[in-house]
Length: 253
Ligand code: MN
Image (cartoon, rainbow, N blue to C red; front, side, top):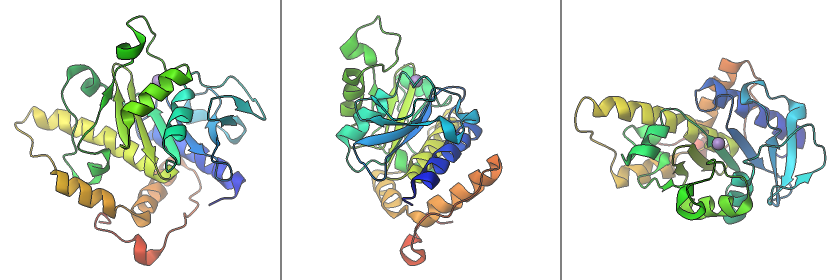
């Protein structure tokens, strides 16, 4: 989907979905790399995701500088997005969240790991970025410049997910649907892991299972979740571009 008006509508929908699925609250954000200009990205003005409208979507350089219309104050943490797009050419969407079940793993040293097949793409090696390591113990924990964003991006490396100590996490995807999907299932995995560990030793997915599930996750899976989540928030479902033959995968259950 490269029609820019539709892309902006999809970004509004992603904001509403992530708010409704308990990933974003009044804070946190989701962006898309500009489909026609890889050096730009699209992100709302600073506003709660649940109430974001089409006119709120702004365009930025990867450095966080505003391009074009400025309907309001930009997010102070937009540098998270720009720095990750700069470091990861294949990434098309970034979510920064304060996903509530995920936070405990960022402050306890307890390692989060996929325990259910839909959650496999969060990965078996989830890092925990601590702003204090490089920027000292007097920051307000917010990623408010490119140096901080680049340090976080370097810590994320080639992974899909990084925790942020005492703050939240970042999730990336090769599409908006993929980043939203992984974000929703990371929150669910965190919640299930906290519950499961009160019951005993957890039999987590193996590295081989994580790899097989992640490699097999394709268009049909994303469409099935996206259509359902659109319906839940009363947003129109705009079918994505996927091939019905290649799109089927092991996770389409
Ligand atoms: Mn934040």
